[in-house]
Amino acid sequence: MIDPLAALPADIAVLVFRKMSLREIARCMLVSKRWRRLLENQAVLWGNVDMGGSLGKGAAPLDSRLEMGFNHEEETNNSDSDSDITGKNSTTSAMLLYDENLKTIARRAGPAMWRVALRFSPLISDIGIRALLDSGCTNLRHLEIRANRKISNDVFKELVKNIGGRLEYVALSTTEVCDRVVQLLLCNAPNLVHLDLSFCRYITADSFPVANGSSFVFSSTSDPESDVAEAVGTEDDNIALDQQPVTEADAQANKHRHPVFQVDAKTLPRLQTLLLDGCVDVYNAAVPRVLNAFGKSLRTLDLSRTKVTMWTIQQIAASIHKPLQLEHLLMNGISIRMGSEEEEAMLLNDWLGISTPIVEGFIASVMNLRRLKLGGGNNLVTNGLVSAVARSCRRLVSLDVHDSLRLGAQSMLVLGEFCTNLTQLNLSGCIGCQDEGIIGLVNGCRKLEALDLSTLNITDESLRKIGSLLYKLERLFLDFCRLITDDGIKAV
Image (cartoon, rainbow, N blue to C red; front, side, top):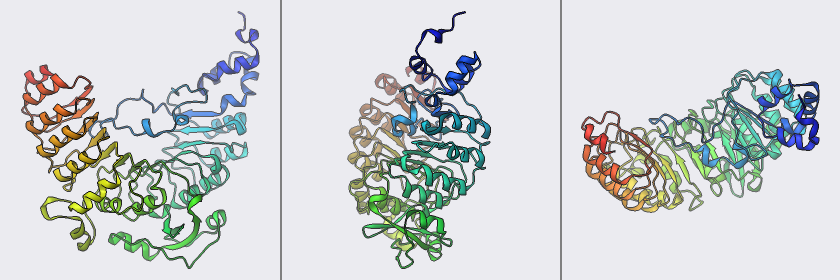
């Protein structure tokens, strides 16, 4: 059999192999000694380490009750995140990586390594990460390490100090990363645009700086560590922290908070995506810090399942950057508790929900919203709030207000009138929404592709309207809709 590479120049052969995944390249190395020498010595072939499977558009849809297919990663990742250097989408199969595997790849790639995507990496330890530094892999632009409890914070700090200058995309979800690592990252990665800290249980408000005039102050609830201060500047113990506590938990934390170092506003990255979903120690104090530091550039903010409360609405309304650039605001499963009685009195308007001035300030700050999540049994999500958002945020394409018991026909009619570009809507558990509201909604929102009406008391009349108008509908959820019959299903 004729060797196909024998008839090709080496540079053309490399272009062919750059279309392959690392797993495919490794198999090709078994063909012959000539192929092995060629592939092993081409560092550019090993620069894109993608293990754990694709999270792109080909991925299986998420559970409708949790996300309704609202996968913000698809739209917010930069182009380098979802494609290799040739522009081809990554389709690497799920594959566990060991320290020795990572060391081998790092040795072959060296400075040519630009992307490490370990979406499921429970077996990687400090040894594997240090191998990146030992092999000179200091040009990383994409760093993704998920589902790992073995990498220490000391190694994360060392990694950030050495490779932070080029980093654009960092995902450390479900790791043991701490506040100090995030502080170092924000000070050493000026090009950072995407930061995913979802389900990192040790992340708190201290990860983010407090505004102090034209500069920002990073603080800590423990004694300052010299390595952090030395990495970004000098320690200043006389800096006054201007963060006002908004809950009792925040007040207790601030009593033990020490200033660590300050940085100029120009040195902070222009962060566009910040994901804090499931960070159970993130309280209200984190919100003004994030908005003050990154409000001019931030486009995606995920606070779902954190300890922030609906007081966040007021904090966004009071933001110094108006209007914010936020396009995706995700706050599913947050608490309705406000903190003190004074704060509740300021926020609430008796039985009507959030007071009108705060709602007006909120929608004035988020007029660019395209995706909003406020679901999870929140009694402050009322017809007034949703109607105000619909009238102002006419670019809205995704809305999740599941289990909002105080929504009814009024807000549905307003959505149908003003949010005609809606493609995804989750109303599961909104038992106040019945036929009148759903029919009015469908009359206006004819671009809907995903619609969850589970547990609603709707009848076949709503389904007939859906079947006759929603030609683009791909997913319809009707779990526990007891009034629907076979005739309604046939109409859809």
